[in-house]
Image (tube, rainbow, N blue to C red):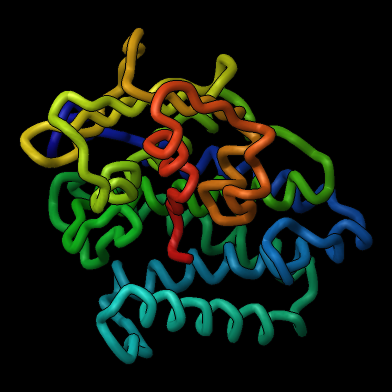
Length: 279
């Protein structure tokens, strides 16, 4: 088994923390809360809870049991996104007949199994699934675990945002989430040419945020964490806006008044198009 020093982002022990907070949250909701609209377009709180359950069951079926069920019709990114959107919609529609109490029960049954499974994996072994939004065609287990962490954090935060019950906007839980999301930055800039040495700094404000720097080196963009004083351009964004923007719940034109860009404007604003989910 690899040591933790070999893992760029290690969040496997945070998965059960998120699940515990989810169960506590769900048990506190009123019947009206379950029907509230979330920022996830057409999904209510209950729909998002159902989607999270699908994540537990589908992930265990694919990764643990090597059972894929339906296969995507093609290999292109748009075809894969359309396929996943249909699977998600089919599940949410079917689960409309399921009560909130049953959803909680099923989460309590599948959540611990999900979390325990990922603890059995060697984080540096290859995963059956690739994290496409980061530009990967093959991914290590640590990256798959990191992707699953962002899914669980994001959808629980959508619920909390809808019912006005915070709890995830902490350094312990938010920073790993945004740290994983930033792994999509090099892929976002893949088609942007610049001189070697050009730097793009993305700063998420407050004590729960941080700074990430893209540097153009040998004709490609390389991501590091840095407090670089004089980047070519810097984008500054707050934590609440960032999770909504980079999950495509908000679009760049909706957040222009909430971000600041210094230096090369076009280069900095390119970061606003980053999408760290399959969408």
